[in-house]
Length: 498
Image (cartoon, rainbow, N blue to C red; front, side, top):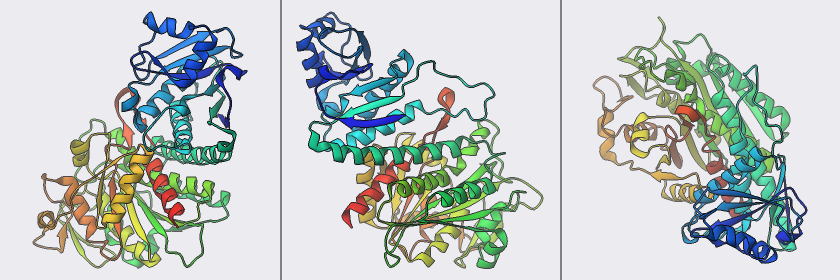
């Protein structure tokens, strides 16, 4: 897909389609009003007859409108103007792109960037347009012998800006939007890849390939023997039941001088999670290939910021393993020693994500980080609490939590902060070790975060539980690419504040 920016009035666009908005109830956007005036009220007469109410996501494709140079005009319902939000805007763009792709327009000029979204500048509207367009056109068909093809697919989108002086900013927004969309695509591809292909070794190879593309990206892969020497007993306790060797993948992006403390992103990379000896129920177990979406999100984010050349130092740390039952697998009641020296009683081997993350978090201390953010499909309890719409966020540093929350609002990939009160730590007490790896049914996502907090006392830290937001189920099953957009927005904000 090709994207570009331009300024100019809609009636002068010599293109296959001009896309304009209609607010509910039956009120034209400024560009739609301009086209209506030139067509002697043709558009408004259609709307008065009830052809389009203006509800969000509605579309109406018009052909050969007089006094215009375009072949078609696509009217897109935008809902009520005062209720227009980031989420609504992305839905509007998605519906427009979907309609164009199915009707053979091949190219279009979008005037939807003029829509008034509170606290959203033209740069953000362009970025959101690109991300939404690329998301709706995404297909994972690499493993199909016969691929569905569109005869005349949408190939080019022109996004408009108010004035010529906005073109430079618009072009920069396109660059950022394409980079974030590409990072999201990589994240989705990795998540959707089946577990027999996407193994820990496969993840390590994909990271190594990225290191070959970007000169300021250094990749290091630690093998099990090296992890054993570091004392990563918690991480290795998970990989014991698998024939696939665990990997610790370190991705170092150097966008600033070496003295600048890095932001460290830690992604849970369980490439398939059967639950281990605490075996999961069989229903929907195929979706446990998505248990590495935290790792996929980190890799996608590193890809995006390297493409944007952000002036930051960012390190990605990905503990990657499978969690399978075997004669050597860790058993409920076993006690393991983490890299920090703290001992853990493993009461449930299906609570393995926190075991690999705790050693990865301890490892992060050597980088003397500015902040550490871990991303993990950690708990079903978070899905029960927040569903698929928001990511659960926990943090030991209020300013970091505020920055992530703000980035979520700006990106449309929202988070919701949950408590880390000391009272919840009581549920992790063990009679035989320093702590247990589970704290019972109550507040499961909180006690999981409390467990991780025991390994993050040396730095500012946030935990993002993406168990509900990382993939969709049902007929639209597939990875969402979240939280790449959120993390990129957070890092862009940090770069701008430096």
